[in-house]
Image 1 (cartoon, chains in turn orange, cyan):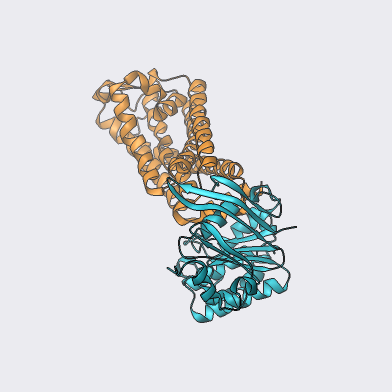
Image 2 (spheres, chains in turn brown, blue; image 1 turned 90 degrees about the vertical axis):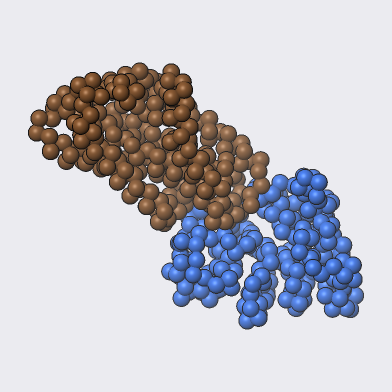
Length: 259
Length: 235
């Protein structure tokens, strides 16, 4: 327990992590706040749908999940940051049982990811609400969208925090790890989805979308949100990713020397 | 009980041998100097000892067991391996607070150790603004947080000015007088000559001499004995 407390203390002391929290709040708020404008302006591409329909208003609020990338970056910083600053030596000398250190780091990364996504999603909901005030004809959102989006956000926060920490432990070098995560989410996943559309439901973004369970279609944007895995299956898959990466990172860390 | 034992310790990186069947013993309650030129394998031996590097062959034991098996290692052994062990964006207090939390050590120790290494005034200053000497002293502060019975110091005099080196000598001497076992590595022999009881001289990953200083030096100065034993290689 004291190891976990120490990891959470480290997180609370680091300005970079507070910066990422602020980034995730702004990113989610901007993404959600700008959605009504996009849906209103590109109504035809959304199959003639408009904000007068509850489904499209739900689509606005679903964007509140979009700060997830920052949860993964926080996870990377929690582990790779130790190697970057040279504090890994002090940490592993103070607590030589590496599996315990890494387990504490991953739990701390999960908690940090959860907290970060909770703040970002709340900010997104607020921004969406304020943006929709400009559209008096907008329908009321469903209650489900708030529950499902919150669930997706919190699950993704935990999972991506752990995944980030696992990647940080595997790569160790901070900049390549951060670049790798960004490439994964913004280049590799979109390319794989483009080439193998049926694989999109197993991608990280696809699984998060699956948890939101929104049946929204926009052929012009090649979007069919109804084609994703059911929420429970998607949640299990996300946790599966986290567990696999965490185990690989643990095994790798036990075998490598600490520099 | 012998405080530290290196037994046939070998560490290879590819085809190069950083340590080659290194065997030595460090007795409790004494200050032992681990001496050797740069690249002799001093740091590698210490890293193997505290579990940061895995030996290719042989073993290193501390207080009779592997370092990772020690109960509450921060309270048994204080370790300084390099001056980069602190987050530069955090203050001295914050860095030490993390370590006390990890080790379950009373927070009140932070002020005590900072006073002991004369860094009280820099308590809330960020480490990135510290001089090398201040960082070395902060490392020593972190090593004594748990008031350990043993200190392992890797090149603690690196980068210190003459006043800093004199201070370091006083620090080690005070710890030794309090009954602590100290293992200190260095390639700067003059700095250690006055404070070590025993020496282990290593060269190219193997021990070339070990024992009480007077026995190893045979009446010569430590530097002269070292040059004789290592074939004049003081690089």
